[in-house]
Amino acid sequence: MKLIVKLLLNALAVVILSKILSGVYVESYTTAILVAVVLSLLNLLVKPFLVILTLPITIVTLGLFMLVVNALIILLADKLIDGFSVSSIWIAILFSVLLSILQSIFHSFLKEEEK
Image (cartoon, rainbow, N blue to C red):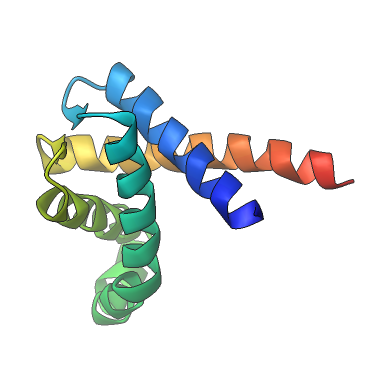
């Protein structure tokens, strides 16, 4: 049940960011839920390989290259989902940072409810 709530909160974050950022388009709420699921799966399956492959440049840039890795994951989700589009890698980086911030805020509300 908690996983479903987290996915729905992530989908809500995607919808909010699509309204704020002009370079991000989400066709419907169903598409936003699909984006949340696909991003979760890509972060689980693809991101570890990208992190290992880009470890030297990540170390040299003191971890800032992880922003590019996150943007690549978002652009990959863009290619996999028809109703979701991101216009450029810069928008994907901004989307990634803002999505992380919104997810942290939303998930902090869940942790307060547990106590």
